[in-house]
Image 1 (cartoon, rainbow, N blue to C red):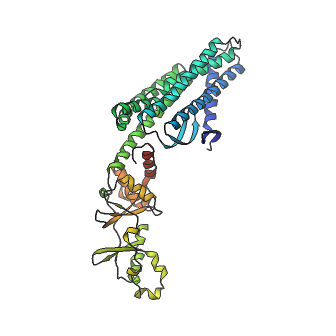
Image 2: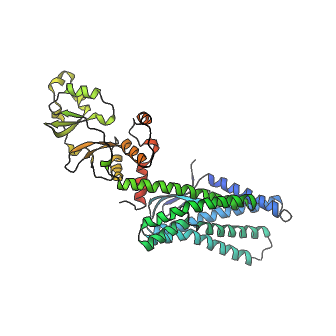
Image 3: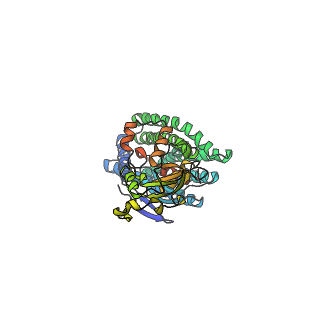
Length: 408
């Protein structure tokens, strides 16, 4: 579903997803029901709906305002943001570059909670000083204040996806000097806190307050998923940073002697099984002597094939995109994604070709390292388009690692 842009500040579009309107209705309905159950002698149905709607609307509007402050501080700390989209009770930021300092991340993590607390205190002050006899207005102001206070406290819970989790991670990073220590420690407690929050939210939902319970259980689910994703990301990150191309079984090179005729070349081309096999690597008395593309066959008349030799069309090996066998996987993925064909040549330290590595080879290697060993029957059926298997988005993971500053 397409998001709607509500405004643009500092060149950054602020968008609202249609789900935002769904949560607006849900909150309005739940608050209205609470008022009807507890204050039916004070407010009629119409007044209850007014309180429910405007409380929800101003609450969600305050979240938008808080995000503006958060964006301002983030930009000042070196964060590069492409756009911001509001979903449900928060926002998703599309970030090109994260803050690279611990202190900067601490400042960014504190913005939203402090904004919530400040908003709550201002509204409570206005509500208590107001001389208005219009109880509906006072009710809305106090409810929005309490909800902002609730959100401020909730966001400080040390769960990875919340500001409290980012704050704890950044504080550990600041004092220890190690970014990974903060990430690792936070993820260990994230899952347990999230499970506890989810259970606690369900209890509150059925016994005390529907929307408070819904909020807590909702954030608990976010935390559980975040913890699992972060654990998986840690493992993938380590694999991509530590593993080398030399650990992967490469696809063999197709060889042809430099003095072979086009007739012999055509026989090899007919037996091609994979896209990378359109390149044939020339040998000359056991030494590598360049490569050719099968398309050279089209440049010569069939009548002349027996008198035309592949060595006359060779290209130098250094013109073929390549990586060394000791190259890290994340760098290899970047090299592969810069090609239109999805594979590169692998060389040893002496610049001697060893084989071909492509997306599927890297993908299955990572999956095996993660403990997912696919049967050969399945691999043979899906290993035909030179894509990362099972939709594993390794280039996106590499970009995310670069965005977070984990690799350069």
